[in-house]
Length: 451
Image (cartoon, rainbow, N blue to C red; front, side, top):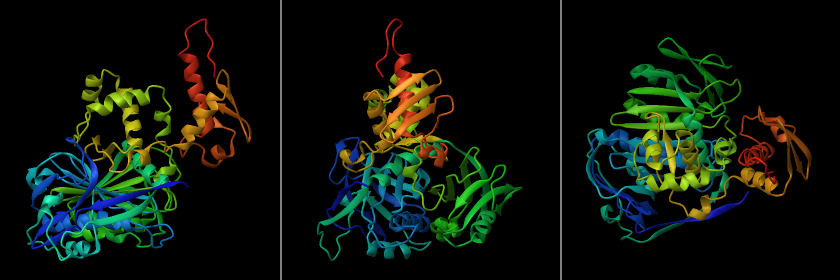
């Protein structure tokens, strides 16, 4: 599997001294343009203890490898300033758990200098300091170099070189698409949420289903009506230190399906939300889901993404109807364009708001392009004339033999499709057939399409 190397370069390590938390930034993009060390926010966090504990949880997910744990590289969390909130995001090293902390306006009292996205340094000493923050401690937060507290390292430049596997980068895109297809399945308040989470098995290998039962949730070992998959219950571990601050728990899942499915778990804290999204199975990363491929395969998606992308201004909530009006595009094409932008890490999805939000992953653009090899292979098949259409059936010639695709249900005779039955997105043969079929629909009468 190919991977790139990302270099984080910080003017100094992040630090916390006398209640002042200075988060050093590295690269990224703001409304004012690309920045080496952007400065976004300076002010008070009105709920210091839950904010410190939740930020530590985001950092813990970035350190974790839930499937086959072993030492490895950690990727620094990503922070986006949307004007009225700060969003901290991370992804586990195994690519199966996504974490986000949303510090909302009610938890922040300060000045916003710019909007945008960057990486922030979370180091060992900072983690220890965050763990010591108490309920009565004041917390002044600065996101940007001007807020750094001078430490004994005397502002020394900090450089970290870490690998960025393609599957890890693709996970950011897959999570936002999968989350957009989820519905709220259950909500527990106060002590009910605490009791339920504490009752779950602590083993990372515990695979369960969770179903509503009146005002509570019950755990079962099989899917059922309204049930949500919880594969690897131990992957919710970073929720537990936050339970003393919990106001409610919301559980989200996609519609239908009897097999393993993704889920999302959102803990409401005072003035903030902490969300975990879990892949369908503990050994599977989100990058293998293929949820973005159907939208990416449309002919207009890339061009539409250019138009829609220019209209994004790091809004904390993207209103699709308004965006469609401004772009002069129908809503379905705007949704496909947002998927295209997601493959470059330019949008995320907030389940609580049921809306996309704008962010720009602070990684080299070259790192996040061409991250869908199935789609690349499908286009090569079409360009090579390997697709023959015959009504609802398409025959695709490959090095492995002739594959037969049924366009109406997206089925294929290849081994990959038989293994997954569409649960991980369409195979390259189905994508190629759909691309070729659309090409014939666009050909004027009296002409033939060269597919």
